[in-house]
Amino acid sequence: MDTTSLHITEPTWDDHHEQLVNNPFSYLKEQTEGKNLRKLLIETFNQLYQIPPEKLEKLSEIINYLHLSSLIIDDIEDDSKLRRGKPCSHLIFGVPQAINSSNYTYFKTMQLLNDFFCEDPKKNFKAQQIFMDEMINLHRGQGLDLYWRDNGQCPDESEYISMVMNKTGGLFRLSIKLLNLLAGHEEYTKLVELSNLLGIVYQIKDDYLNLKSPVYNSNKGFCEDITEASLTQHKPSRS
Image 1 (tube, rainbow, N blue to C red):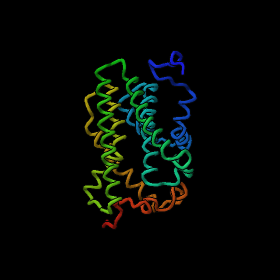
Image 2 (image 1 turned 135 degrees about the horizontal axis):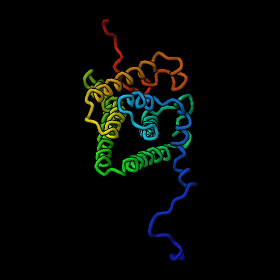
Image 3 (image 1 turned 180 degrees about the vertical axis):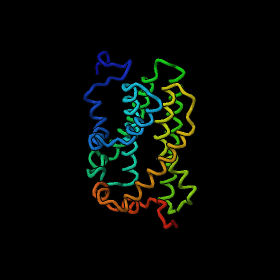
Image 4 (image 1 turned 45 degrees about the vertical axis):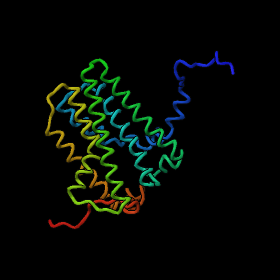
């Protein structure tokens, strides 16, 4: 081999290889176009912050990329078959490629966040800190959910709520905290608390629809949360 022709100073990369690595993520992204709850949430809260539209769009993209990446991993961990009525990404591209594409997008998103705040080093440092904190929270919540499921343990109500605040509330909180950082305001503690409540309500509603909604059943399968042994908190309560 003639090593003089090798590019050994930096790894090389091109658009074709980027597409190949991104395929599992791009496939899921195409299935979920136009169904971006987190973008609507950001736009709603921006009535308070008044962030310029171009910055708001970039922030929404960052949050959506994180959300979609987490869905790929969720579907693998839950052995899901359908996502929005289509075969899950890992069933099309295989589990190894799907995991790699999801992890790759996590780091690409961190890179996007770094570029987004690059003009202000202090805000950039804070943004990366917020990002890491909430990604850790998300994986803590997911880890507990998986542990309870795989070991047949049913959490009490306070444990369940704590898990959901970590798992589902993470991206809601991340949205609020980054909006706050962009606007340069003092932290809106009540909005962070509201985002926690939204995460709890969203998760319980999602679990309930999995039991009751015909549309949900056709998109993900009937009672998937039960067949995957996910321990939700739906039980009779007094009105």
